Structures are given as C-alpha cells and as structure tokens.
Length: 454
Image 1 (cartoon, helix red, strand yellow):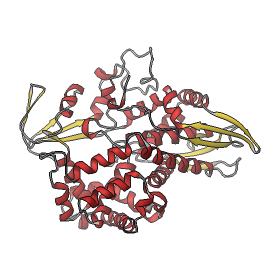
Image 2 (cartoon, rainbow, N blue to C red):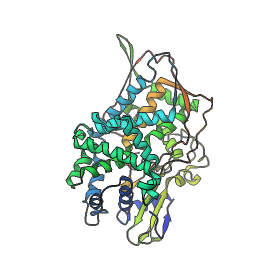
Image 3 (cartoon, rainbow, N blue to C red):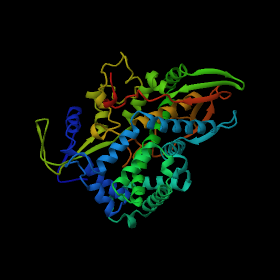
Image 4 (cartoon, helix red, strand yellow):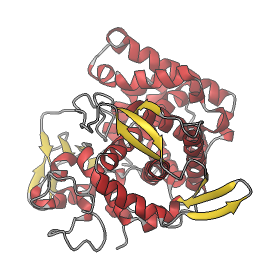
C-alpha cells in the first residue's frame, strides 16, 4: 500500500527501533487490506477484521486473537510436535516409494517434486485425514491462484481481469467451506482448530472462515517448497558441502539388526541440535535466496531513534535483500555462498554474523509464527534425501535458474525454470529399512535472533 511518503529502512539498528513501536509503526492495517483483497471476504467479514484492528483499545479483536492463536499452536509444544510428526512420516513414505525397485533410476523435475511433496506433507499435517488438498484439483487450483496473486492485487475488478486466479481461489475456498461444514477440522491440527474456534467466537461466517483459510494456506506453503529446492541445489551442486553435511548426519544414525536386515533410525530433533554444517548451510541458503520486504504503516507522527521524523500515513519498507547483501554486515565475501558462515566456533570467518541480520523470517511482533515448523520440514526433507539418494542433473550441469518471476507472496525466491535430475539410490542404502522420528520440541533451532540463546 503506497502512500504520499515512503521510507526505506535498511539499517539493522533502525529496523530494531521500528520493531519496538508496533502500535505507532503498524503492520495489521496493511495485512488486513491485503487479506481482504486476496481472500475476497465479505463486507461483514471485513468489518470483523477491522474491529480494533491495531489494538488501539487494548489487546482484543479478531486480528489480535487470530494471530495469538496461531502463535500458541505453532510454538514448541504438543501441537507443533503433532504437526511435525505427521509431516515427517508423510515425507518418509514418499521417499520410500520414490524408487520402489531398488535398482531403479528415476528422472524428476526437482522443483515440481519439491512443491508437490511439501504441499501434501504440510497440508496433511495441518488439516488431518480429511485434508482438502488430497483432491488433486484443489492442489492445482491453489497453485493457479498463487501464480495469479499479482493480477488479483493490482486490478480493481479481478473477477474480470484475473479470472483464472479468482476461479482457482473460489475452488479452494469452496473445498474449505465443505471441510469446515463437515467438522473435519476436528480431526486436524491444533492450528486449524484454534483458527476455526477464534473465527466462530467472533461470529465469522463459514464462507469467510473458508476464504481466510485460503490465505492461511499461502502462509504455510509458498516458501517451504522453494527453500527445499534451493537446499538440495546447493548441496548436490557442491560435493564438498554435501559430503560434510552427510558425514554429520550419518554420525547420528542408529543401526539396528532386524529379521529383515538393518533398520536405520534418525531423530530429526537430534539433527537440528548436532549438525552445525547442515544448519549453517540452511541459514546461508536463506541469506542468498530470500527477498522478503517487511512493511509498516505510520499511524501517527513518530520520531524514530530521536533522529528521523516519520509522518502519519506514510509507509515504511524494510527489504531483507539489502541487508543480506551488505558487505558491511557480512564481510568482503558477502556475494559468495559460504556454507560455514553460520557455524558456531568457525574461526575462519573474519566477521561473525550478526544474528539480527538474517531476516528470512522477519522479526519483532510479525516474526513468522510458522518458522519452527518450516525449519523442521525443510531440514527433515533434506536429511532424508541426502542419506538415501544421489542427484545429478540430466544436462550434466548444476546451473542456478533465474528467479525473476517470484510471486509477491513469496519470501523465498522461486525458480523460473525447473531442473530435471536423475535420482539414484546411494550404495548400501537401498536394502535398509529407514525410520525417521522426532523428539519433543522443548529446544528449537534458532534461525531468528528472537529464538537464539547463545
């Protein structure tokens, strides 16, 4: 939402100052405007969203309580653990069936595979056994809608000028309406149950609940799939990085003899806590491949950091890409992909990374509530893949695709073109039974500065 004034903030210290003033420099008014346009909610639904939107009269209202319910459901605890375990078992089953014949070689499109598998693993974890995305038509409609988001947002009459995207959105919304009318959410995760209950408490109609859920699906799906794509790309395109990460993970594999041979067990929680090169690689991928922009609306004239007067109704943008590519923040090798950059105790770094400088999940009151789930999903998928399979591009070269068509809803860059790869079982792994599990999430791997305790 552009107004008469636009302020660009690219200083880490100033961004922290902005984040400390969430009522004066607010995100909810901008979020609500875009949510109404994206979801096409009713006039009555929009009025419910707008009621005490920015908390001027206290911490109450639909917007505040819906956000709080998401945070509690996705915070470390039983709700998050339940989603994580469903997700991990979905991905494990998918990889079990990837090459049903042990000597088989398979060709896949890496981006297409990542998108489908992440879509199904995530939505099964969120929506449970009656997940609407199990209908392939709903899955396709969702991604058609995501692909047309820009056309919906920039046009005054999107039902005329962005018909395909609007029809796709309506198909997904209708699937969610039937899901909620049948009470299938009662078999879903704590996240979908709490979102639904909050909406009902505020007398949101089932039609609007369904439409808001389409927006909720965007939040949980659009960034994880491309993040998996880029993680696999950077690992398999660099044999040294791949070998170091594999060695770390393999040291945590528990081998057990069974009547059918060998069972190999991996605890994903242990991986997050004991694989510094893998987790450093993940953070470096986020630094190179995220371009999110945090936006705020100035609610009243505000003196920022006792230096800068921000005028009422102006817009503030805080582009993470500027910070992620700043030599003053990251050192002279800022343009290089250095998988050791974030590793604890890395003495080769002339400049220790500032935890506040990695902005992939945002920060402050708008810190992504799904960051723990997304991190586990990305690392779990990558771990399962590098332990079991080798990947080679069909044309023999790992060439990074352009990302000029990345959608407006995406924080992680989306590849413009796909990469066709050959999948081959690693030697000595095809005859094993694999068991991937997850311990309790009392401790989390802190990508965001707010989650770090070191």
